[in-house]
Image: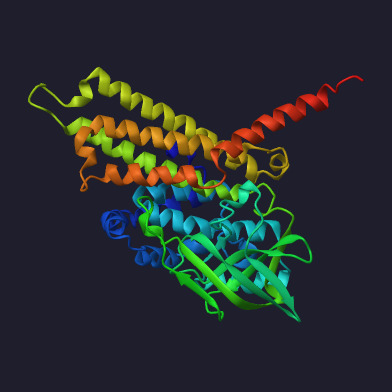
Length: 390
């Protein structure tokens, strides 16, 4: 990882995170086994100021870039994936809100104070009927204007970190404007409830429950963004916290497998299984996949952070997510092949990594949408460069 650490500040923040490594790793199995949300881990991150890291320095935050965020998030995910993914959404939403200045400055200042005081936020956009907003379905959740307020009703699924969220940045369809509005809803608003529905085999500790809205009344000033697209539309480099998380899981699986290979000596051998060509082949393939995925992830993050290059990005965010998450699944699979049947024991962390890493395939954008966009971009580019002659 040293190759990707570029600044003294990054080194300092990594050290702060590594101070949490033993504690986070120790609780990871119990979090998964009992499907417990890691509140203590999240509070520990709030206490060191990590949760306000992507808040710009002008607003009192640390001013993490996208590159900083993925460096830290990959590390955090290698300790505990549930903690990393949960807090990653908060970091990404805060970074995106302040980068795009989607709100008035007074509202941004208000929200910055909330974040500095430990408030947590996540977007709440997925619905059972529409699935991921990246597929283009408009929200079933509705927002109706009533004097100087809005009334929101609907149900959102996959609301990660719901037990500790202070705010929900929620999408709703505004019929009279034929657009999607994104509203900042405080957890204590009347009519807003969390229904505990999260019962899955992957990322069991993220508490990604349903957000239920029943005529929730919110002030007009809390309309943060209007968009033609259900997902917000613009290229969002802050979503790279997603592949960073799954790369961290893959790294943890790789570390376990290599350590096992160096210390497991069956009586049929004179030394550890790491001396076997077949095991070395698998280790080498893991290293290759990690190197390829990591360089792609960090190079795109670096391009996004460069204002002169950001505008040149088109489908790269989706390509990174597709490549890294699929590579992570492959890496964990190879790690399990090295360890063998022991990797299936419930006490073995690899079986947890195996289940958790597959969740990445279902985070946005979906693989088929990424491939479709790449194809359409290639076709449109050719048509633009070589118009048909009538």
